[in-house]
Length: 152
Image (cartoon, rainbow, N blue to C red):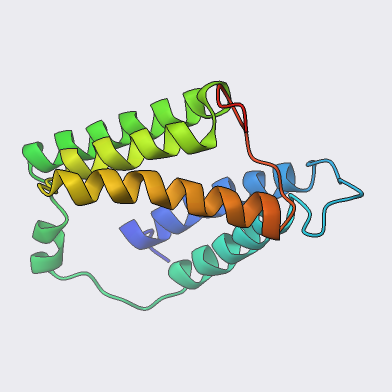
């Protein structure tokens, strides 16, 4: 059984998913939370394992045209790396600055960087979306999010 690119990726994803799922079972339980913090990570880990197994056993045969489409131009690779850097900064500063401010900054700069030119609507969305999510999580679901430097 030759290891095609799909099978190699499936094996890598399976290992990552197994580690992720193991770590999600290590999350502490909170007795007073209506939805515990480990529900989504466990669900995502199980889903990733199922999808990696499906990818491993898929019978797709790669043609030469598909191999050429897989090559990413250098400009697009730089854009991808820049977005990964923004995501890394978002994760790094998430608890320090807080959910609302950091998410607003991330949405604004990421969409601006990716070419969205309507800056007024970009500002409105980047402020209203994290505020809406904060209200839903904190007041409707009872899940606390990092407040950071905001006194809310």
